[in-house]
Image: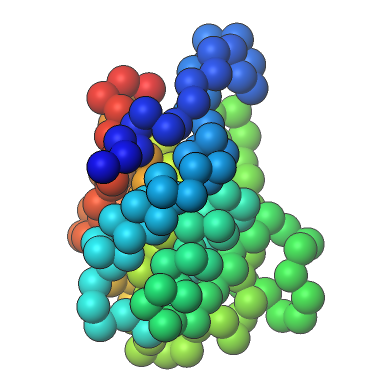
Length: 173
């Protein structure tokens, strides 16, 4: 059986010096590893979800495959100005400043159960903002599943109460 961690490339000093980037694109190149990643993420999604939400951009790849596998609708959470029509917007704190994510205002109906899927949770800011968007639309985040977690950054703590889980965990940052 393929080891997912072995298929994730580590790139030192990207995007800046001192950062060790975990590159999921090498996993996506391997059909067996990609299939296993999708299967493992899908297995952690609560059974009673209505929709899967994915965060731009690598999260779209996993979320779309999981939504297809589970026969669920797909919600796109994107950077600002990328979605046509009326959107909801949520800003969040970065280490040096703020950023914003958006979702179509009608992507989630009141009462719908949504699982968030992304490739990585690090500080948790983007995931937390995505959850807030879903909740502002009236949805309920019933789970958040990440392919990778940089546990040393404690991002999962920002999702307390939202049933988050990870497939590949890196203890450091």
